[in-house]
Amino acid sequence: MKNAASKTTPDTTFDVIVIGAGPIGQSVAARARAGGLSVAVVEKELVGGECSYWACIPSKAMLRPVVAVADARRLDGAREAVTGPVAAAGVFRRRDRYVTDWDDSGQAQSLADMGAHLVRGHGRVDGPRRVAVATPEETIVLLTAVHAVVVCTGSRAAVPDMPGIAEAKVWTNRTATDTATVPGRLAIIGGGPVGVEMATAWQGLGAEVTLIAREPRVLPQFEEFAGELVDASLKAAGVDVRHSTTVTSMRRPSPAGPVTLLLDDHSEIEADEVLAAVGRVPLTGDIGLETVGLTPGSWLDVDDTCRVRGVEGGWLYAAGDVNHRALLTHQGKYQARMVGNAIAAQADGRALDTSPWGRHAATADTHALAQVVFTDPEVATVGLSADQAARDGREIRVVDVDIPATVVGALLYADDYQGQARLVLDGATDCVLGVTFVGYGVTELLHSATVAVAGQVPVSRLWHAVPSFPTISEVWLRLLEALRDGERQ
Ligand SMILES: Cc1cc2nc3c(=O)[nH]c(=O)nc-3n(C[C@H](O)[C@H](O)[C@H](O)COP(=O)(O)OP(=O)(O)OC[C@H]3O[C@@H](n4cnc5c(N)ncnc54)[C@H](O)[C@@H]3O)c2cc1C
Ligand SMILES: NC(=O)c1ccc[n+]([C@@H]2O[C@H](COP(=O)([O-])OP(=O)(O)OC[C@H]3O[C@@H](n4cnc5c(N)ncnc54)[C@H](O)[C@@H]3O)[C@@H](O)[C@H]2O)c1
Image (tube, rainbow, N blue to C red; front, side, top):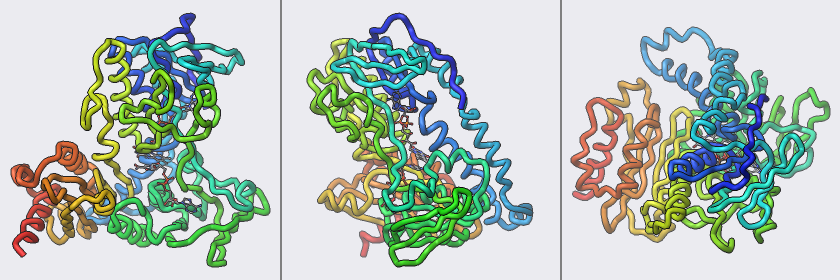
């Protein structure tokens, strides 16, 4: 791992201090600089964070070649051109290029270009408006913030507690995205986004993957049909998917030998590596929260402007994974824009607009959260699922369409298209509350749905948004027709 040279400044008072230079910290810095404020950014590892080097970027760099080959295999005429397996070495080279060989000098330069001061080292809050940075040179740099400190320290992989797990040396998202050899057999614990994406990638790269999901289906937090379609496709690709199954212990008697996993049904699985994909833990254990009356190790509880609750003076903010609102890069960057704008507005003496959908309220986190899971088929979803809307006590209308049965553009895209779409409407206003698409090539459709949900577009107006023929986006028309046909019955 290479680090760009450290650069601190003699001036230790800044308008804003950001702890953590992942995508979210960088975005806060950019907005605060755009608002005319001076900014220090503290980073203990690589500028760019988990997302750039061990999460979004490397995982998608590895998945795209796997899915491109699968796409070709779904087309008569193109299928014949695929004459061998995915070349893992080429995929790893591609990934290494996208993570710039884990060298952050380019991203450090971007911070410098925006006029933010990078301080390399471990940052800790040190009482009100102060941050102490333990530098690699073993000095302490004390920084003072005039307006705000923003915690953007992100999260790390959770590792389940069970006998034998320490000796088994399990993979986390880091190993799963920076390893350059394909294990013969890979067992994955957890059927969330990390579990299903990594199962897709590593099975595609040649490993024999077993996916162990605690719930009755994978992707339990999404619409039921999403989990079912992804589940079926993983099985069709050769993944051994076990549902409603828990690993109770594991043993790896020899460090270079295989791992044996004991399951709750008393059966055993042998694997060469095991990936823990069971969620995240906040990186707040050692950032000085106790100096301002907060609990170390906890997710930071924030309001809609991402200001941390319970801190006198309101100078502490938290954005990105660390506040647990939405563990996604784009949603965190959205929060960062709110935070940067709010701090700049307050520094200027301007009032904040914190009303729902206001300029300084991250309303989309709760009402228009968008996410794509890059499996094959992909899952693209925004807003509320039918279950979430019902749990909120809303009166809703739900309509589903079978994409290959109704959308010719989908069939032109893939000869054996698999997919489904769901529209969730507010029964009182007929506005779009949520949309889920599952299918090949649906990722780029998602933003149409995001605009409809965030814009609270009513169905009557959607009829005037005419999708082009013959594209997969004609699924919108089929959803409206299914809704109208349902009304006639
Ligand atoms: C395998 C995987 C794939 C993913 N894919 C996607 C995807 O496709 N799309 C998507 O939207 N999201 C994806 N995510 C989620 C995404 O990675 C996170 O939501 C995102 O990284 C959060 O950004 P962040 O800036 O809050 O935290 P991070 O990216 O974790 O950055 C935090 C930074 O803070 C630094 N830091 C921590 N503590 C300190 C300290 N005390 N002092 C100084 N610096 C500190 C860290 O070194 C790090 O650089 C994925 C996650 C995983 C695990
Ligand atoms: N494309 C994307 O947007 C993308 C991709 C990867 C990750 N992410 C984000 O990163 C975060 C982490 O993802 P994740 O999949 O690790 O977490 P997750 O919390 O979304 O899913 C983890 C799954 O593991 C299960 N689990 C928990 N403990 C377990 C145990 N001991 N044994 C078996 N199963 C167990 C959970 O029930 C859950 O289904 C999520 O918020 C996710 O949205 C996003």
